[in-house]
Image (cartoon, rainbow, N blue to C red):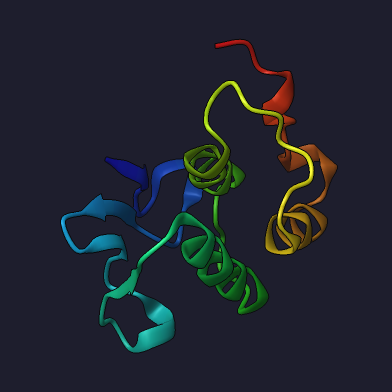
Length: 103
């Protein structure tokens, strides 16, 4: 499952689930080597690193990873600090409240 792809919505990252974990393929923070995360929370933290470096990461990718943690019907609050920081960096115009979405 792909969380985001290069160029999709202007994304500078390609993140997908694999048998090894969650992979940031061709990670520009790691000189083009892939970065593996064992948990969605770890990948969210990694994507925040991309944001800090000035890379464009679609908020939808972070939200999809967060839904892996809480499940589609669970309350999204309290959210982890890295998710809150990601929302603050992106600004309200790029963020959706995933708790408000009906599934």
